[in-house]
Length: 553
Image 1 (cartoon, helix red, strand yellow):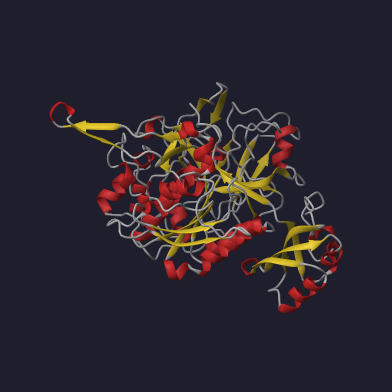
Image 2 (cartoon, one colour):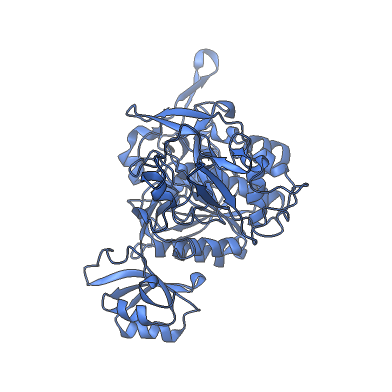
């Protein structure tokens, strides 16, 4: 890595140049950068935006001429553009059995801090303490240069926070049901990285992750929700955002990330496979795909949301997603005056009038502008984050790896073989229920909370190899992965066993693509994109992962 073009990300040459002739980059050093490193950069016109010590790096605006100096510098390991991130965008709580966990174990997230790295969080009534005398948004900070506001101008982060920790205060009357989050008494650490358009840079996301790690002990931050993503440009081992989420995971924080909304994308002939976004491609984090509850609390009729991104990940071929959770037409908190509220008025949830007494003499109407309906893997992710908060509340000593393993082992696997879905324009999409689509299955919070298995080491998602002659993929675990014999399932259970992945997806330890999936001839189209060694594919922005449409039918 010490020489030549391998120090530079492939998309660096085409990255936009700022109006002042500089380019915004993230520099990763092969050791902790010193004051001398920063002085040398400043002397050449470099201006530091953020010091990114958790990845031995810095976000810097540099003159183009400084690139040659960086390439020759022996302490510079990798330089990538400061890419843009965007968002990945009721009956959902019942579908994942959160209500049973609440009732039987008395779990509500009390005392657990959840870092929401998003577009900000509005101080909604549903995020107040149970007595209404204070806010459970215990810390707020903006990482958007020139904009110190921590309010939610876009409207995405508030919705996410409500799915995690809303207590349903404003929907007790005047609404069809009470809209509560999975961990309705958890605390929110509001780290704003996305602006009013739902966009933000890699460096802002990394800086927010660092702050969460720094504040972990102060606010008992045990869970981090990242409902945003962007395309994959390099291995997770080089990607600066992936390295940042790994640092949070190693610090004892469960990192839950949206898979992305590319499941319908067939632009490269993959039928939506290979569309997991960064940092959901990191093997350590819990990457979440989206299901549809189809308007009922019973999960037996639930199906995959066709927009939910599928694995394996590009370049590294990591098995993703890890889990599925409800993400379609989810009702949660609204941020007044935000971009989503103003641009998508049809998705605002209107109150109703409830009457009682003789001849309906006493009527109550709920307050308008309190709730919003959104769809996307952005909405599925905080359901898993809320579940992690409940698990930590019950057992404070749990590690992120044990939480991930318990969730995946106990995930419900009663899916059909396939299903059709239709978007708002009437286009149909077939979803095949293989492990690249549904991961280990559907989050079951009650089962995960009851599980007592322990991971003694790490639990990264395995890597997959593809055999074009048999059209099968196999799981490959390195010696450092402890999903095998060292995980105390009772009996020695390996990743390939159906107890983790489900009988419908496993045959002789091989994951079957599914007969209805058309991959084309080996070496062509979809196969070459996913399994090729030099492919770099994906959007150039990191966005909040919610769907711009009203979900799907």
